[in-house]
Picture 1 (tube, rainbow, N blue to C red):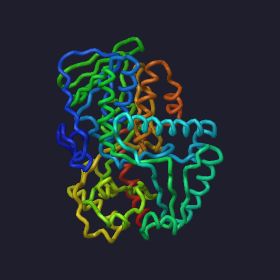
Picture 2: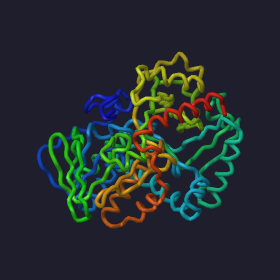
Picture 3: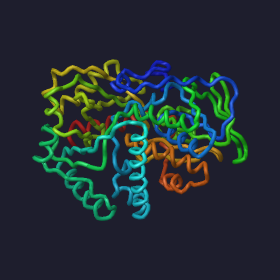
Picture 4: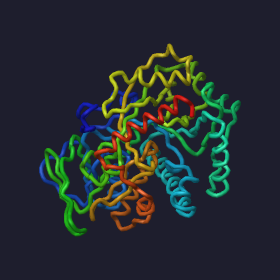
Length: 436
C-alpha cells in the first residue's frame, strides 16, 4: 500500500482546520526534465524544509522534491505541540545511552525548541507557551515529580511545574485525571503555517522546491565521490548528496530505513468555536497530552475551537468516519461536550521506531536520513534537518550523536512490522481501557 495516495487526493491538503485557516502560498511547479544540484531533499515537511533552508543559506544548490504539497504530511496535520526533551524521558535516556550522552541529547532537544521558535518568528507564526501532561494514575504523578526535580537539579531545566489534583483541575476541569504537570518552556502553534513559512524562507535563501514530484527511484553513488540520481515521473536530478526526509511516507524507497521505521495513522477533530464554554475545556491557553498508549492530545485555537487528537486504528487505511472515532475519547474526558458540533476531521501518517527514538542513519555513502519521531517530531524534526545540513558540510557531531543511539530493525524487517504493531496496539489499547 502506498500511503502517499491511499488516504489522500493527489496534491490536496486533508480536510483539516489547519488547511482551512492556512496562510496562502502559491504552488511550486513539478520537476520537468533534467536537473543538477549539490543536494536533493526528498520531502517538504519540517525535516526537509529545515535541511533545505540551512543548506541554501550556506550557499549550496538545493532541490526539494515533494510528492504532494509543502507540509502535506505530518508536518501540516499534527497537534501543534512544541514539546521539550526527546521522546523518552531523561531517566530512560540515561539507561539507554549513559548520563553524559543523556545530557547531550537533552541539550540537543533544547536546541531544537530554540531553533523552531526562531523559525516561527521568522515565518510570522505565533507560539503560545505552555504544554501540560495529564496523569491517569497516582504513580505517574509521583514519577513526574521526581523527573521535574531531576531536570532542575541535573539538567538546569526548572520549567516543569507539578500540579496536584485540585491545582490541575483548576486548569483542566475533567474527572479523567488525578494530577498533572505544566511545562512552561514548551508551547503550541499552527503546524501547517510553520511548514509554509519555512518553505518561504528556504526559497528566499535560494532553494528550489518542486511539488507533485513523487520520487520513483534512487540510484545511490557507490562511493562518496560518485553522483546520486533521483528520478520522478517528470524528470531526474543528479546530485552529490541526498537527504531522506519523508518520514512515514518514505515507503520502500530505502529498505534500510523501512526496516527500522514504521508508519502509523493518527486522527484529529476540530469543534465549532466554543465561546464561553471554552472554560469547560481549559482555563488557560495551553496544550495538553495524556499518558495513554494511544495518546489523547488537545488545545484550543485562537477562535476557541477545540482541536483534539486521539483514537486508535490498526489499518493503514483511515476509518470511514474519523469524527466518530475521535469523538469517543473526547467525550470520555469532556462528557459535557456531547452536543458540540465537530466541523473538521482528518487523519495523517506519522512514523515510530522500536525504541521510540528517532532513526538517524547513513543508508549510503552520500545519503543521510532522519525519521521515526514517534509523535514527538515538531521540534526534533526541525533540528534533524539542520543537523543533516551541517553533516553535509562536514560538521557531523550533532547528527552522529543522534545516530549513535540504538536503532534496531523491527523483527522480520518491513515485512512483519505491521502484524506486530497490530498485536502490540491491541494489547496496549486493552491496557488503556482497563486503566492498567
